[in-house]
Length: 242
Image 1 (cartoon, helix red, strand yellow):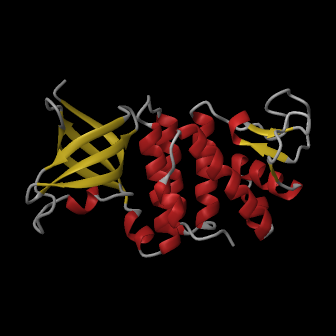
Image 2 (spheres, rainbow, N blue to C red; image 1 turned 90 degrees about the vertical axis):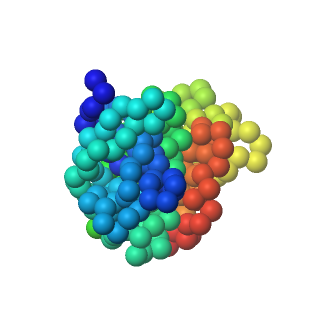
C-alpha cells in the first residue's frame, strides 16, 4: 500500500533544501527507513520537534520511489530534550543510535527497536550511569544480532569457567589453553559486571567497583566494534566510566 504507519526511533537527520530533512529511522515493523519530512525546519512546522534524533514517534508515511514521505507524526517518547542537556547521556545516546544504524543495515527486528527505545528512555530518566546503560544496550543488541559473547564458558573449547582472558575475535571469555599470547585479562569482578549488564541486574551493576566497570566497558567496546567490522565514532567522545 502507498501509505503505511509504524512506530519509529529517529536515528539521524540531514538537511534537504531550505526547509526539509531526510530522516533515518529504526521502525518497529519495517526495519530501517529513510524518509523526507517536508517543511520541518520551518518554525511553523506542526511536527518538526517530534522528528529530532532520539525521539520516538508514531508516523504515517507515503511510499515514494526513492524516499518515503512523512505525512503525520505523533510523539510517543520525547526523550531528546532530557538527553541533549547532559553530555554523558548525549554521547551514550549517539553511540546507541550509531550502533542501531549499523546493525539495521541487515534485517532489523522488533526486539532491536524495543531495546533501543528502552535504552533511550533509561538515558533520559538518568536511571543509571549513562555508560552502564550504553554497555548493557551494546551487549544485548549484539546478542539479538546473533553475537552473544560467551562469559561463563570458553568461547573456543567450551571449558567451564571462570576464565580471565577476553578475546573479541574468538567470541568472549577463553580459557588459558585457548587464549592467544597477549590476550586482554580481566578480573572476576569485571566478568560479574559483564554478566550483570547482559542480564539487566542493575543492583549488581550500580554497586560494581570503578575498575571493574572500566574493564567491562573496554571489552564491550572492542567486542562490538570487532563484529561491526568498523569503529563506532561516538565511542571516542565518551567520558571514562566512573
